[in-house]
Length: 266
Image (cartoon, rainbow, N blue to C red):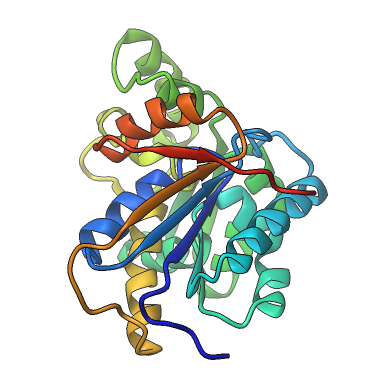
């Protein structure tokens, strides 16, 4: 398959969290064209059964491929856990996801081999992070943190209520010998301040969003598909309300965005 180096990078997320991945990709690869699709009509994916997530995610990825993207980035931990094996067989363009890059980074930086991952229920149920570290000798503690997404999308990154929730979620980590924590949902890097405060400076945080962006750069460089040129274009699609997406997306991306609504058949 011949792919135009100027074709966009397709970034998929169940909703808004993947914008943290898009933000780092834009910083690292400002010349690349970006096409982002958030399935906000069916978000959040976290509480849904894996089979349902798989069906929704593959439909969205098919939509991006039909729009001639040169690479796919699954910027959603839940979707990555559900569709990675199928997606690698289904598409013949570079594909990057969030779980393996973050897990590998965590294993490299951990001194005690005691690692925790903060994630959604669906990601925890899938066992994807357990599989990613299984052969390394590291021990993984999984903590489900559903309310973190609610705080981020409400624009709340501090305050007494969030701190109380964080202390409750993170109590099992504080009582263990964990020295490295994976932020296993792309919303969670926006709460790194409160998470780091609760866990203390001796615990290293690994952002699945940042590691995914690093892996995207590496993948395109290896395939000689990096775009040469001026600043790339940014296009944002949502299956839900475009005004709401633009409002929340502007806050998460750090810049004003225009959003188009798109229908994805499932």
